[in-house]
Length: 80
Image (cartoon, rainbow, N blue to C red; front, side, top):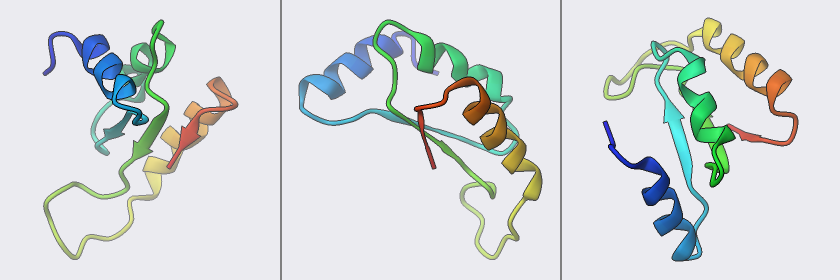
C-alpha cells in the first residue's frame, strides 16, 4: 500500500505520462473513488476480469458490475 499516492500521481504527470490504477476482481470498487475524486486524480481505471498471475482463467462476468458502477458515477472516466 502506498502511503502517498497523490505524490506518485503528481510525479507520473510531471513526467508527461497519464496515471491509472488496476483493480483486482476481489477489490471493492469503492476503494477506487478517492483515487478518481482527489485533487489530482488518476486518469484511467483498469477493471481486471481475472485474478492476476494465473493463466487459463475464465472471464469473471461479475466484474462488469464494477465497470457499470464506475461509468454511472464517472461519466467521462477512461475505464478499461
